[in-house]
Image (cartoon, rainbow, N blue to C red; front, top):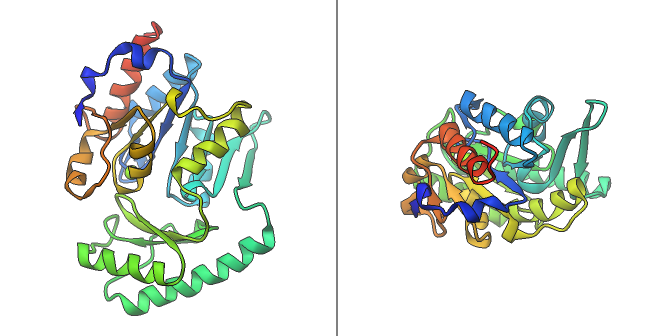
Amino acid sequence: MQPFSLCPPQRLRHLRGVLTDIDDTLTAHGEIAPAALASLQALRDAGVPVIAITGRPSGWSEPFALAWPLLAIVAENGAVMLRRDEHGLLQREFSQADERVREANFERLQACAADVLQRVPGACLANDSAGRLTDIAVDHSEFAQLDAIQIAAVCAVMREHGLVATVSSIHINGWIGEHNKLSAAIWAVPALLGEAFDPERWLYIGDSANDQLMFERLPLTVGVANIAQWAPRLQHLPLYVTQAERGEGFAELAQALLRARGSA
Ligand SMILES: [Mg+2]
């Protein structure tokens, strides 16, 4: 990872937009940093679309999809897209359009969650579980503390049940289906902007293990400084790392991008 200050302005100038993680990238302890909120507004004012892609549940994300100056939030790791329509009302779309499939998957997920709680001592479901429509989440660092062995055990039970399992900075998420943060971008960009997703023209910024697919597959990726705590356990690192942590790190990116475009 190189310091983000070394990123040449010409790499930022012609970007179509920004894809961002939420937890510990825009927020700290679930609250958006004032600097990050101001940066989202500045990017919107400059005509730079920002799409957030998060492992957080639909229910948790909905108020923010209405309140924050974002084009949309894709929640539950690519399963649910939330946006404000032209009347200011919330629009919710699912990547799995078949409601009967979603209902059957929901039952399987609850059975897996019960099995995790029974078989991994100390495991508890994330506090935001009530708002989850297409996945389950076990808390490892938000309010609970699980060590690396317990985290691996939770992932193993989820995979035994046929779930995809990923580890974010706070939760272990499990879901059914092929969606992920990259498929979220491939789905959301055409749906929101009416054009194909061109990975060359979108920057991704994140902070932890569940951002690795984006770090691997997008040419221009940035980590906020707090990624350092995860770096030894990551297989794929971002190209650049900001000097500041969390929302201040996002603000550092936004300022450089706006400067490169001549809008700041
Ligand atoms: Mg995160």
